[in-house]
Image 1: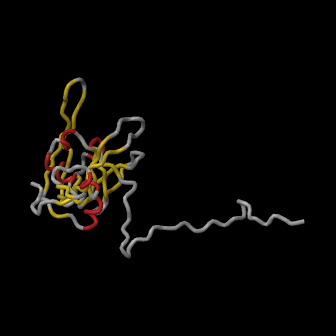
Image 2 (image 1 turned 45 degrees about the vertical axis):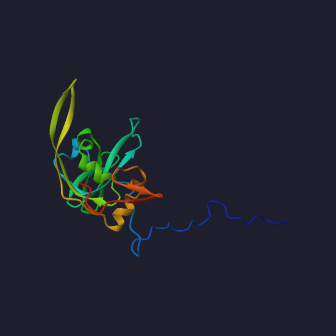
Image 3 (image 1 turned 90 degrees about the horizontal axis):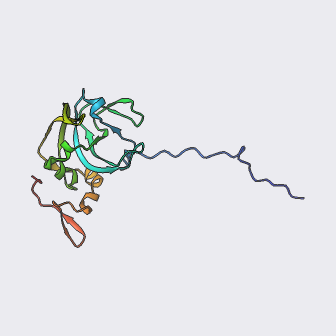
Length: 184
């Protein structure tokens, strides 16, 4: 009579978890970015390179929302998904919720959608104003340095913008081409 020699779940050794390689051409991916929310972060400015504008999935049953991805160049603060405040260091990627005020600036829109250009931005909530009906709207002190060509990593990050119908991009046989001059 043969006995069953297959291991049971209690005596099976699992392989060690595989960690993602960093270096040798690999760079870490930002899959769990912190969020810069004016309400909790208004005491600190957010300064960094504008990489993209993303459509975000609903959170907690709310509607979909948009966010700008900023790669910080100066220390700041931002929130994790549980609402806890964390320090942001230069090089961290942070989500900045898109607001009507920020979305209304054509320079921000052009750079956020460009696969070839980026610019360093400075954004700091400066206070709230009443817009009627008991609602308020955050105002921002914001500025932008002149655009520069994206480095290779930044260009790969925003490659999908070239496909997304950016008016600054001219498609030719499926290949995107930008003019050599900055977008504005």
